[in-house]
Image 1 (tube, rainbow, N blue to C red):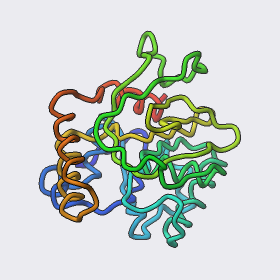
Image 2 (tube, rainbow, N blue to C red; image 1 turned 90 degrees about the horizontal axis):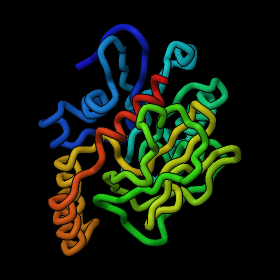
Image 3 (cartoon, rainbow, N blue to C red; image 1 turned 180 degrees about the vertical axis):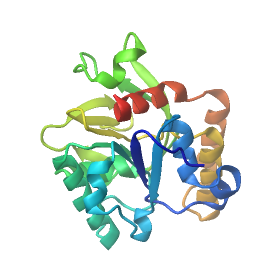
Length: 248
């Protein structure tokens, strides 16, 4: 699916499509479209993990970019990650809207001068309650929520985190597990550690794959599954916040 016309956005995909994502959703691009896309928009896909980047001369034609999660380390020095950092620095200088999710949140922070690394507390997988910073600056993307909630539940799946945000950034969300769950720079940079686009089935399939690769212990995986059965993420609220950011 591709929405044509109107404002133009791009997904910078930093992960390979899983067999499950391809079979059920037609690939992760469609997951992002379902979460953030609306009628009358044009969305393009760039598989940055495969060294596929937008033409620098075309950047001005985009209204915003969404940078996905990834199994790669945001602090790694793969060529595509270094090229991605340069692209993010360019987009920041142009004040283009960039929404970074999970790995995207981390590498956005790195590219703009912050610090990221392996979380001292290990994996964070499943539902996590993110506390919204009290006395939040007037960020427009929270405007139509009425009263800003004190916390929102989101699906998480990461073992790296942001240690220090870039100069000029503001931490706007935290949890009991991760100190920087959300950060923003002005009106054009927004990072979210969790996955506002994830459905429960996507996470559970990912847990199964991590378990099969011995990247996760069975007891921990069982805890995640149980947690997903007893509670739900605030997906509609997260999607609204992200859409407001991209389109406000």
